[in-house]
Structures are given as C-alpha cells and as structure tokens.
Image 1 (tube, rainbow, N blue to C red):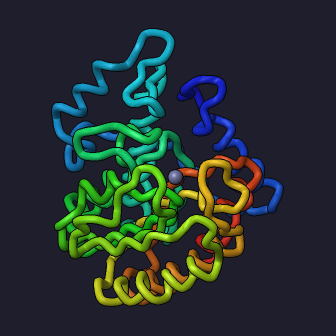
Image 2 (image 1 turned 90 degrees about the horizontal axis):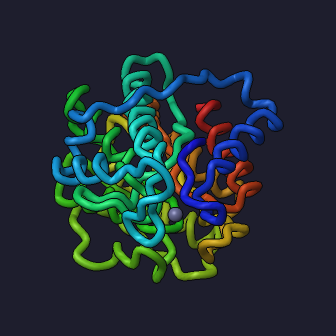
Amino acid sequence: MLHEMGPYHPECPERLSAIGDRLIAAGLDPYLLHYTAPAVTREQVARVHSAAYIDEIENAVPESGLHYLDPDTALNPHSLVAAKHAAGAVTLAVDLVMAGECKTAFCAVRPPGHHAERRRAMGFCLYNNIAVGAAHALAHHGLARVAVIDFDVHHGNGTEDIFAGDARVLMASTFQHPLYPYSGTENVAANMVNIPLAAGSGSDAFRDAVREHWIPALDRHRPEIIYVSAGFDAHREDPLAGLKLTESDYAWVTRELVAVANRHGKGRIVSTLEGGYALSALGRSATEHIRELLAA
Ligand SMILES: [Zn+2]
C-alpha cells in the first residue's frame, strides 16, 4: 500500500482495497485463509533475474520522491520492499500448495510482475513475481512440468523472456494485439502458446482461444501446478485497453483451469494479480476468480 508511483498512476494502492472490499461485500472473505507475504530471498529472485539487474534496482531506490526506471515504472522509497513481498507471496503460495495446506492460492500483490524481464524493469513491474514462483517450484520442489497462464490484456513479455525455450514451462496467453508491449507474435518459442486478440474482442473470441489453443496444449504438457498471471484489464470497463471481457468470463476460465489442474496437477493453482485498472471491475472480476478457486 506504500508503493505508489504518483497521484495519477493507474497502478495504485486502491487496487488492493478494491479487491479486499469486494471479497467482504460478496461474503467470501470469511472462507479465505489470509497469509502475510514474506520477503523473497535474493537466491529466489536470482533464478529469474540477473545479478546485475537485482543490484541495479537495489541501488536505484530513492530516499524520497520517485526514481523512474521507464516512463511508466517508478520506485518510491517503499517500492522495493513491496516488490520483495509481492514475489515472496508467490513463493509462499507455492510452498503452501505443495505442502497440501491449500489447493489453490491467490496473491493480492503490487507491483505486478509479468512485464519484468530477466534484465529489465518495465510496464509497472519490478520483479517477475510469477516467474519467481514458477522457478521456485522447479528448483526447490523439484517439479518437472509447470504451466503459466496469462490472461492479462497485455502480453507477458517478461515471463516469455525468462522462460522462452525452457521445455519445463508451458506459457499460454491471450492479449490484445497490437497493444503495449507489442510483443508476443514474433519469434515465439515452442513452449509459448500466444493468442493475440483484436481490439473489441469479447467473450466468444476469448473462450474460443482458451478451448482451441490453451486446453489442448495444457493437456499435452500435463503441468504439475498451474500459475495464473491474473490481470483483469481485459474487462470491458478497463480504461487501458479495448477487450470486452466480463466477470463471468473470468469465472469461466478459472473453472476451465481448475479442471485441468484436477486432471494433471492435484488441483494445484497459484494465481497472482497483474493488471486491472477500473477499480470496481477489478474488484468484481478478482472476486469471481477467487470464488472459483475457493470452490475448486
Ligand atoms: Zn495489463
């Protein structure tokens, strides 16, 4: 909540309150187990980011004000602490799910992560939280096959940069194209299932992509755990993009992923917040996603 990038930045602390408030209003909150995210360790981050990059952002934290890493991404004095706990949330979630304490987990974290590349911060992202989590399952828990699903409206270029060519990791995504960061359609590696959607696409195009491309690829890969880069900015009310999903699409895709996880991965799903900038739509969408994870 202390990480903020200026008064008009869409990636704002209120995003987390919007989700928390809606979970309470929907009556789901009493059924959730809440955990406090630990800080990630340098060793855990170094599985997916270069040592030079880790040092670079450690040294860039300002004593006051903002330090810009790119035109959209800034550090305030609290940002790196937030980033460490955001990535740490995903590693804790992996540990809980692998230990069987939970079947599914949702990490309500900021900053998001899927644009952060191995050597570069960008697009509101510092550490690639989901990549840190996926690498933790591979290195620490000894899993052989994981999947990363990304339904954020923006392509997860950072996750692709980190895992392209790593046959242990299947990444399947949908994203609006063309749109920031303009990646995902060229030089795609064999382990990437990227489905670009034209501006204006809605429920039908999204569900077709999931049924025709994601599910068959997931069934071939048989992931032992599924990660979700849960960005809710493909919602029709979102101001940053032009897809037209609704909360019912997020509920539907979550049920589809639960079914895949039950077939191949003991039901294990670790989901983490990425984008979503219309506060009411974000709260409603995340709540429907979490409702289905709870029911899994
Ligand atoms: Zn996004």
